[in-house]
Image 1: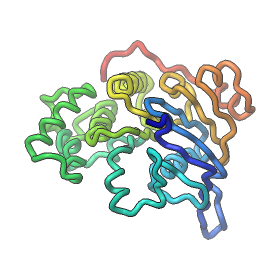
Image 2: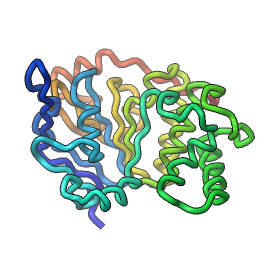
Image 3: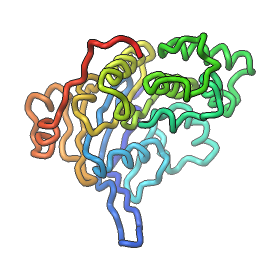
Image 4: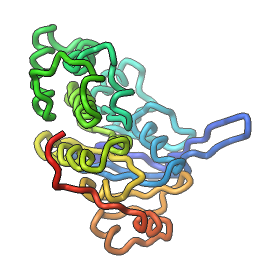
Length: 262
């Protein structure tokens, strides 16, 4: 089995606006290997979220290609892409905004199973309870609504929902930036545990290098749509090569690890 799960080759994305063309991603090549966490970092507007959407096939590149498990996402018929879609899931920055507010916690986790016609209602419920337990949500609270949970608990529910279809790739777009620093550490610990337990691959997007330091095997740094540096996490923190990377490192704040569960 090839080691590469996702491969982007010379990808460019140009948006046409009233003010003219905006080159959000400019000739970027990235690879996420099986069982690996790739951290994608940069300031707001650097192109990292656009790059993530391109790598998931949610947007079509202006040029270049993206392959998932050897298949060109932009050449797949819609039916085949829908079949492939469960294997790549996303966790968003704002957990409350990403959850269905009129569904309970368990209802949110069951919904992707229903949409993809996985099992019957009882088996979907059983699996949803198992996932809520896996991410640290008290299953006695499964019938509560998202607004009744803390921000950290909401993100755990969102992670459980993303895991429902048993993906190979989890794309996390600033999943801790809206949380308190102590809660960030707990969510990062959960991601580490899930990666080790389930063998997931992660594309972890953040503007904060301290966050990806704890989770990523490799780090790719984007600035103004371009990839300016890529290396192992250890090497990048020990000896960054690009001035922009050094600027990001100078702004790093530590993530506490001494807090209890959210």
